[in-house]
Image 1 (cartoon, rainbow, N blue to C red):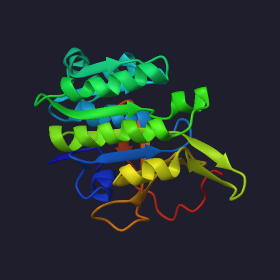
Image 2 (image 1 turned 60 degrees about the vertical axis):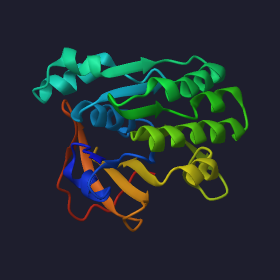
Image 3 (image 1 turned 90 degrees about the horizontal axis):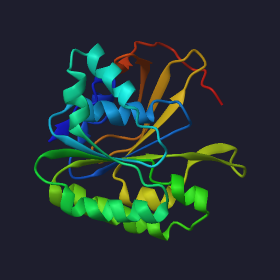
Length: 226
């Protein structure tokens, strides 16, 4: 079972959409569309959404705007989302553990946005991240839901590149990985870094509108923001 992203290019990149039973990691710099992506997948598919918002990025107003622009009743859209707002690492751990009993056949998606924010703020090691990912992996498989984990980036001075936080820890548990970037002209780009069925390196372009994320036809785009 696949959940549509609402963007034809992204669905093709992901071999049809966001898969149930596995964890999809979406990472990238600020304002590249990661939260909008997660909200949109929840909005456009059947089933309830458990949304763990660690950064205060979930916006009911934005979700209502996206729903209305797509001809979806905003109130019904909001009622699909079960929002959790952990204020620290300990609350986050408890909430993710509680999801094992909360998630039932009415749910199709779990989102953690982002998994690493409190770890970064509290200066912890990534051992607890691994434990929470193990719980999320269990939920994905046993409850047959899609799990989207949003991740932040940091500047790696040794390579001069932006890299995902806890790269190896998350990489071990996340079967599918998307990287979002911004182009100078305002167009966003999604790069497939890993997938169970697709070769890595696939690229699609999209834009952010009132509807959320939409396809954009772009040819010969070579200049990306640093």
